Image (cartoon, rainbow, N blue to C red; front, side, top):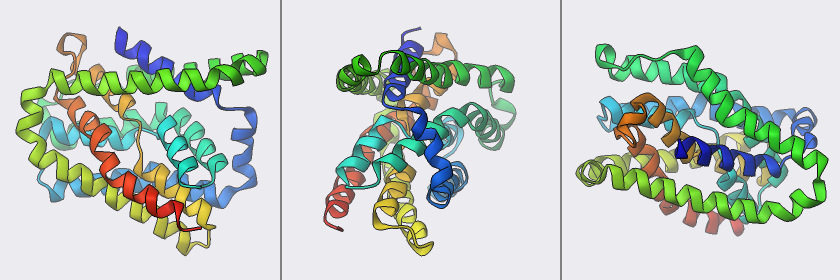
Length: 280
């Protein structure tokens, strides 16, 4: 019960920073948005699948990586985009829209991953129920935050930094709990999972910059699409993993890729951030 509530709060903190303009902005900058959206919805799962096959990852870990690939970016991607001197407005718009569409995309990718990597041993997945759960965990908190911000804009503007800090702490706690709950499995499989996830972040971040550049997007837009492509919502990945495993299992092996990702992504993102800040 604690994990879904924590995730709902994190998504609420994301929604507090949004306005209707963040959604309307999509129509004003369709090329940049569409490239960023296609990266997250199509390119990301394809690259993740290729990395899984290349590193020989199987079973629950492979499913866990595909869960991560299905997740949208989070508050972290918006912060990194700002620090990288990217296009924060584009980052926020991508995070907002992709978070809302995740209620449809996550069940589809999850169903494929379970069938592809676990076959007959895969746990039963009710797509309609999973979509409804995603709706409750992502769409409802974001929409509620939009309503609250509309009713009390000044109060929410003041509260946003505090909510973001609390969300960050919750993210760290959830990652730590997932690792602690699978410590033996984590240490045994880190030599494989670690390099695979590092490669995934590096490839996605690089492709996320190069392709928009080929389409003539501005430097700020390229940096933003790169960050949004490379950063996923690890907390949501852990929550989805818990849904698959069942409440009785707690943090199972499905959650481990998202938990490890929450740590190793900074090995790539810190130097990328250093480079992006100097590209201007």
